[in-house]
Amino acid sequence: MRYILSIGTNMGDRRDNLLRAVEALNLVPDTNVLQQSSVYSTEPVGYANQQDFYNICLLADSQLDPHELLGVCLGIEAGFGRVRNIKNGPRILDIDLILAENYSCETCNLILPHPRYHQRRFVLQPMLDIFPDGRAFGIDFGHYIDGIQGQSVVPV
Image (cartoon, rainbow, N blue to C red; front, side, top):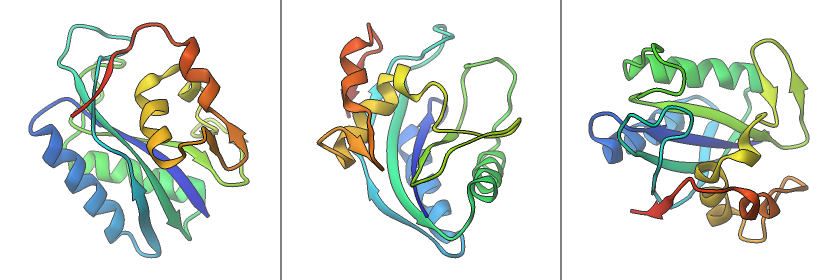
């Protein structure tokens, strides 16, 4: 199954955190990162009193089902030392499943497509690097970006 993942970080060496997260995902059995967006510096959303983030999106292929891949992503975050103290607060690493090809779900642990991806310029702008026509897995996401106010997203 193909997935779109969003990765963000605003603590420590942000560029290195992104590189190491991609490396970690590529080490997961039967999982390969197929494409990566450019790196973007982005304003925090939801909790403003923190450093800007570095964000990327990935197109990945995995034999893992979405719930298994979510577990892997949470494990990678924990391995980096992520602690969840403040909602939308500073974090060394955040890996979100955004879309899964031909799959949707709504459980207590996972909602796909991600319920807020269309409100987040830091997800949509990097997705356009991978899908320049603004369509991914049959979903037209490109039109959402024009409706978002603020949320500065600048290539690094």
